Length: 80
Image (cartoon, rainbow, N blue to C red):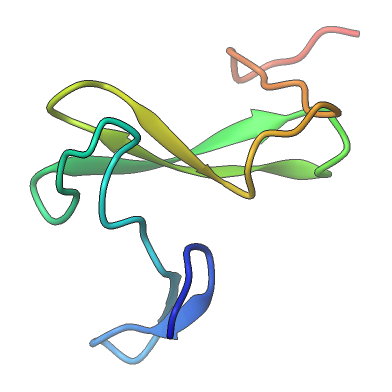
């Protein structure tokens, strides 16, 4: 069984992260129903999180999940 965030082969021959099937509010996710993005993080995850945003309710799913040590960045630039 494939789980969220696992690498799976694409139909074009590449690889992708296995996406969530539903948003946190239960809406079905798939082509035309979600936006895939990337959220930079200055915390312990060392990089960022892949995001899937539901177009029906604007809820987001993060991979890896956002933990206590995460600091999500709202802007492209981060001031120290």
